[in-house]
Length: 141
Image (cartoon, rainbow, N blue to C red; front, side):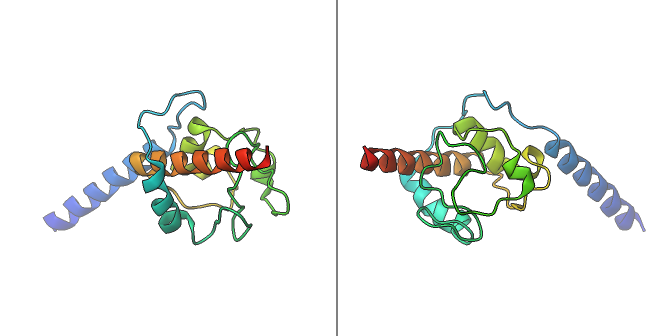
């Protein structure tokens, strides 16, 4: 019986910590606290994001070719949720970090349920997306 009570108490404490963490979102203007590695980010992007996203074509999620500096919910040809269409955000390091950490907190009703909780992995993927966006912009000039 004592083990049961301890298990229930630990479960409730953990649930409270999860809910508390979901209510905290970083400011869109806050600078990134971790430096990203674009090369590592490419590998992580394939592993963490590749099931739904691609750099150059829409899939379950939108393509990420020109993410930096673009408005959320604006990739041509992708059927966004109402939550994303109405989100007034331009993607940069801070907004992408907030989004990847908890999409549902940033845009309640979004279809993206995946969260990337590791700060370094977020920074690496964001560095990769910046590199891809800059390379794409250079090609069109």
